[in-house]
Image 1 (cartoon, rainbow, N blue to C red):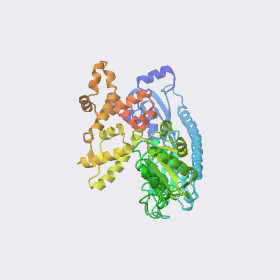
Image 2 (image 1 turned 180 degrees about the vertical axis):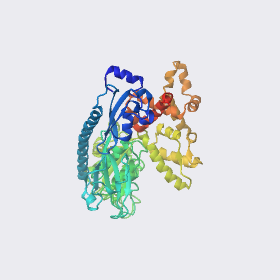
Image 3 (image 1 turned 90 degrees about the horizontal axis):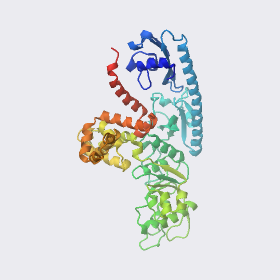
Image 4 (image 1 turned 30 degrees about the horizontal axis):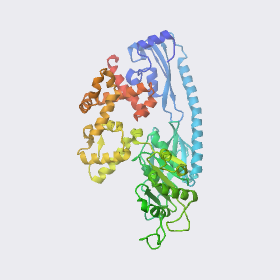
Amino acid sequence: MEGESSLRQKAEEINFIAGTSWSELHAGTNAMGTSLAIGTPMQVFASEHFCQSVHNWVCSAAPIKDPVTKKVLGGINLTGIWDVVHPHSLSTVVSTAQVIEEKLLSHLKFEQFMLMEHYIEIAHKNHGKSVAVLDRGYQVIKASPLFYENDWIDKNNRIIDLDNVDVSLDHTYRWKEEKRNGGWTFELIPYFHQGCPIGYIVHAISPPKASRNTGNVTKHSFSNLIGQSPKFLSVTTEARSVANLDLPVLIEGESGTGKELLAQSIHSSSHRSLGPFVAINCGAIPKELAVSEIFGYEEGSFTGSLKGGRAGKFQQAEGGTIFLDEIGEMPLHLQTILLRVLEEGEIVRLGGNQPIKLNVRVIAATNCDLKKACKEGTFRKDLYYRLNILSLQVPPLRERSGDIPLILDRLFKNICIDLGRPQLKLDDRALLALERYEWPGNVRELRNFAYKMAVKVKGNIITNADLPRELREESTIKEYTAVNVSDCYMDKELQPFLSSPQCREAMCETLSLKDQELHTILTVLNELNGNITEAAKRLGIHRSTIYRKLGREYSRERASYAPK
């Protein structure tokens, strides 16, 4: 808000100040709120206002629209006392809104440039893959020739199967083409620049073909990975971009985050997808058998060896991918051999003399800090740098809590079908408790929780009372901390009581769910100096959710001031 000081003082008397809601829903007819609601410029003169206290004012407003999606982003409003308002105030706000929209249009050109640059990068790295890049309005910026050859793009430069998709879509969308060209599958993935979605990437996935293998096949692809959080989308986007590069990949992340699922997805999306995918747990193979198991052996190498020898895991992965899980637990003597395999691209079997050439891609994964292991001497530095050419960091579940409802929905659907029981849903309070829990076991722990609930809960709805005790206690402590309860008590002798089990139970009963949510949001906003975007990221919710919940609270508080 800007304007003449005495006029602003009069405006404050009718609550025309920053932070109040002048939407048509809350304040009735007024230029600013009604213009935003209907999406057109308008002027409301004196008694045309719904609220009697505004009958002495004239307001002119014009909406600002996104040049791509045509959604209303905001508005320009000029307000003044009725007898001194300039006759051109409405045309002034319309002109101002147009200038802003022109600035947005020039920013759109920059977004399109970034999308084109990303397309060139994808096309260079993924030979043989068909992709298209779209702007936020689903207009095609650039696409592989196959999209045009198969008539997947219409005369309006839009992908035909996206005509009925909601333009507010902000997560991965997958559909299958059954009628034309043999049943291709498509994935539309948001593309982010500096944390903001600026467009979409569409991957065309050909119909599945029979594999050359009878075993060692993958069960997962990128379409099986569930998540909408920025960190998760960032790592999957990066993984897609490196899928067709024949370079080692190191996947780092805590136990249970789905590192092997990501490795399988990379393999399934690569030009090696028809080859085998061989997984080895480097920490589970006995030291005495490790060399022969991984690199194979020749006949007569040791007592009990098979006639003709045996191919090791690397040879079994010929033409495909070998996945070295828990690489940090590999013994040092094996690390030395592995380094030579990576450097030379060949192996020598145990008891053999002749090197055997390999055509294998290596993907390794670890849940430990390999840099620290190098300093401690338990992992070779040269092997670390050889593996760490392409590195992916899988975020833990606590950093993508907004994905928990999506993952649980998929888990419950599959588990309930397997157990032959009715489908399960979570009520709001139980879901809030799960989103606040730290999940030290990550997705693996979440899957175990889903099985427990499917067996334990007899009805269709999981309530807070059905949750394991540790989840309820964790949630209660965080709820009470969020309202700064400890700050309300200056007597430090009360602190031990506040963390006691008895007090935890009392907390759940004392605070309503809405109060708990509101206090949590307000506390985080206070810590971040009112930054809604950062607060939404920390809480794992959308910005609109914060506005909605705070808006409801404001509406209740202002109910007594509603126009009669």
